[in-house]
Picture (cartoon, rainbow, N blue to C red):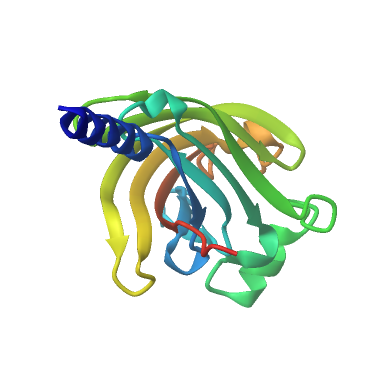
Length: 192
């Protein structure tokens, strides 16, 4: 009888241990933060904020205990043309010399259906912080085969108004609304 109670207690403890939030490190090699907009109606260019650095805390059983914090250094900005990169990082746009990175820090995470989340947080660009809501889809949670450690992957979308962040040049000819598409993979860090 005691063995049965002991086994039951161990299973109960093990179940609660797996239900705890897990902290993952964002993998910059498998993370893209793409921004796209309309350029005078002729094209819809995009750029990638690469070199993402941050953490995702994910609790599948209690998503409200989840969070995300990411820094996007403007040195990782990829505009697919050197001249365009120089233009975007100049004082006319992102002013990378004065504001070297953009950041996002969640303030609330909510379930939004099977495998879906709504992540509300503060986006800071050019020293201006505004609330943003990300519509998020869980791609997969499990063991990443190459790293042999627990990993999660998400896709997310949002729309922001660039003028709210001091990036309003040429509005409305160049669209004020910028579509954000994010894909990220994050892995539990190696034990030290």
